[in-house]
Length: 116
Image (tube, rainbow, N blue to C red; front, side):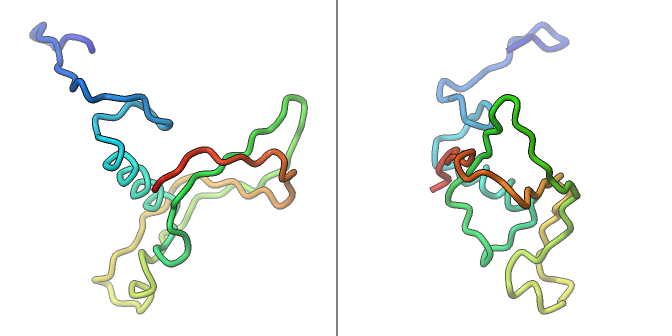
């Protein structure tokens, strides 16, 4: 970690670990919870639709091509209760860029990590 404007060195916890999505100062359970919540928020995935227990990835082999539809995720209700139209109910912000692949080779799909 670098020095600040006063030349003081930053302090990094000895409990840091390299996580699949970057460095984390949380323990494993906290990191998983924070990752799941952040993904749910930007991907606009309600509690009932997907528990986010695991992440999957598409590994495109060199030389292969795949066609996808790209768009921004719209705001979505946090839960079924949020769909009742009451302005006080929580909404997920969405706004991540998502790509939908209508046709894909199932052999290119692999389990990336567990979020349990």
